[in-house]
Length: 318
Image 1 (cartoon, rainbow, N blue to C red):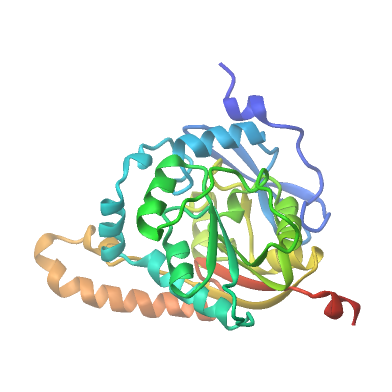
Image 2 (spheres, rainbow, N blue to C red):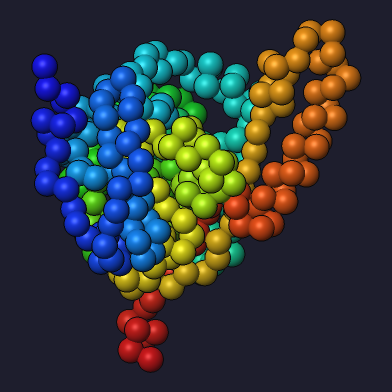
């Protein structure tokens, strides 16, 4: 029986979608869902699954599995809001990220009497939408997975739309901020996503993107075995340099890049004998934080957050 991914895939792209440079095979990632060839641009370093699956293949994958998982089938949609909040209390990764990203965005936007309009693409469980509402944004959210939409309603008190960004319709200049947290790596056509974001943003609007860093020390050591290399969930593998190049190509001005790395203390705890956990885990956790901070300082952290501005008409003509 033919692999569904192979059956749905189009022709292999010979040129990089970001810069137009030539591409060469980087790795083949084998998962329970198939064999996925990953190519890399010889010029800008952008890596991507090539050939691409069809949009229909991806829509089926996300509506049935959600985007919080990697490249394997999962029953993650059975999760309750209570369970999601319990996990977040133990390891508040999404809450910390949402607070940092929203505070950074607020430093770039002009506050007015009316609420600023924010579009949260692929809102997941709603932590970013919740923080955006808390800080005064008029929030609109998109999420394909039904279970995650249900949890978003409980956590963020909003109704996320069950539509892909490709199919989403809104007027030009409808938003002041567009947030893509851990979602652009899933996009089938990254040029379409960035171009559409430019059209949807008002003049001087902000696009905030958070995604795995292909230049991280973890990816360099683990190569295709790094957990974020997980097709078909992740199709795109960016570094700050080629992500910035993609945004600039479509008219954005890059304002700031952040590098963020975290490993939960439980990662060490599971590897230690029970009698040693009380004494060793705090020390190991402190040492790990120092090491991760060093990775971030030298720009090889796990995650990148990149903020870009859509130039207004006056600025473009200047």
